[in-house]
Length: 257
Image 1 (cartoon, rainbow, N blue to C red):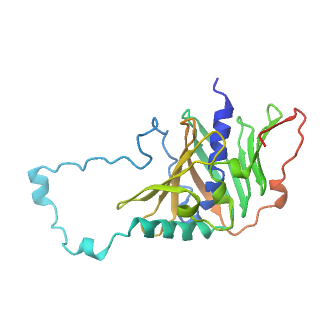
Image 2 (cartoon, rainbow, N blue to C red; image 1 turned 60 degrees about the vertical axis):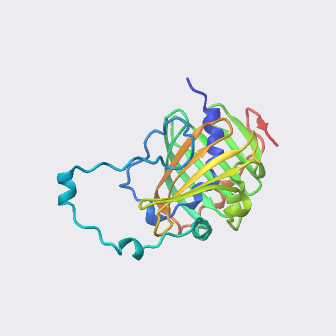
Image 3 (tube, rainbow, N blue to C red; image 1 turned 45 degrees about the vertical axis):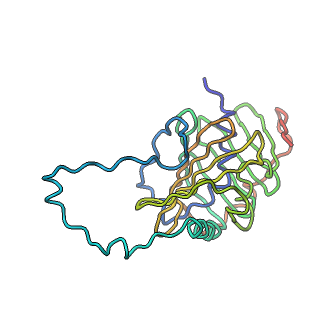
């Protein structure tokens, strides 16, 4: 049986990103993400070759408007990062259902509550019985089945910069690559100052609205986690009691401070 610890630490890596999705892009009828493949050489979406048309199909295809591309100028990587910052900064509170595909391909579901800056709760549905809580100073990974709790400073988590009031990807991380096509704008970033080593994150946005559609995290151990949000509510303020971290548990905390 696979231990929940690698899954838990990968979930710590995705904590902060969960607050970034918005209701306009996370609808209940969107299919959940597929099981992630093995760790790719690069984090971006794979570049698949365009299908080759037969002569007959090509002859029947409508003529392409020569001005179509000119009507939709492509933004620069710098502009994409700026638009991502502005979009991510806009979410201050959120409640949502989430679906997570873990490093072992296992699908997990649960509820997410966010109140910026710094406060968040990932509550996993059974059988996981796992909770991840950020209270503005610390992050706790609680295993309710084993009555254990691991504590970390927010500064140790791979995405601590996204728990701040203001998001500045270029300042707070290393932007490794920006790719833009008709279907998505993907910004790949790296944070080296994390517990256990660096983490790599791919943020996938809608190329027009820059609504966040999906994110993938690869932690220092190579574990890959994909997350999607559904039934997102950005107007209801979560109960502050949801973000309380109990400093002592019956089984005794396992502090990482």
